[in-house]
Image (tube, rainbow, N blue to C red):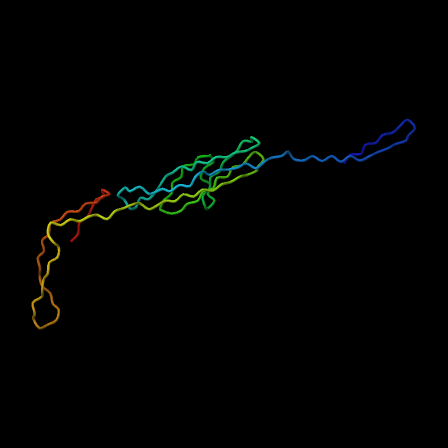
Length: 173
């Protein structure tokens, strides 16, 4: 508040109060776009113990006031992954993953956007077995008056196996 006072040469005065209010400069919140969701699959590599997938999150930010923006990508547990608009991420295992892009302008106004990434398990087809002979062989225990029993048998088979995924196979009888 300010008081404005006027005095004439005869000593008469008049005064009035002036109220000055200074408003902060206007600033619109920035907007963030975390991009499109992704559906990925763990590559089949013949090793069931390797299940990592690397991908890129690509987002953007906009500030209608033209302010410079800073970026931060976080995962669903609020761990910061990157401080750039694009972020390379490696996840281990199939599942649903969520990420948030937050943009800040120079006035600390924020905008955020989230995106989901779905990772499917490593594909694997059952191996195929091919035998040259039939595998059905019938043996009958000789009747000896005692239920049950055992007997020696000899089996012979020739076969091969194929894995459409190209995995190494182990054979057991």
